[in-house]
Length: 249
Ligand code: PGA
Image (cartoon, rainbow, N blue to C red):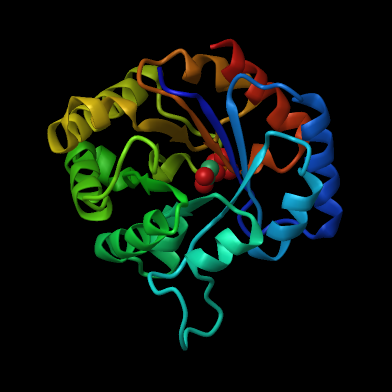
């Protein structure tokens, strides 16, 4: 059985005042059946870890460098995330692929380092609207998976987030058949590459405009093991019902 995962991606949002949201979340979910993860901005990681010292809620980073140290102004290494108390990292988010020119091989190199540093690595894949309209979705996903996921992936160190770019922050979501088609496809590719044991144990998250109102429907889809949530993870009052829906799924 795959452990369900509700992951929040705060992106470039949150200063110290946002720690109160973590306190509220911890209070609302003292014994969740799902794993809960928040990926705050790097500046808040160690304080978030302190805030959640008595909570099962985990903390992750939103990116890391492929190197562990060096002359890379402004970057954060996997080791630094671990040292700050994070145990997960999001890699290859479409915002980084688009705004920072990250290619599949860059994501793969980062993922290798993250996995070797004992960070559970959430690798994001997803098609643009133009790619979906041209019926290229599955080809795009296959290429991103093949190029971004390193060979050392296991069911423990890898999570895949399917995030259609056109659904992120837009309020649009694919219908359940579209979500199911891509998640089943990702599962089959992972099984083919890594064998049934590993392929079946990797968790697959859906991301893109997950809200309290649509969470239950999304979580009813086969091979959806949780969600990567942006906007609706910023406030405990929004993220909490999403966690409840996942716990109940
Ligand atoms: P959203 O973002 O939930 O705000 O659409 C999801 C994501 O980018 O991970």
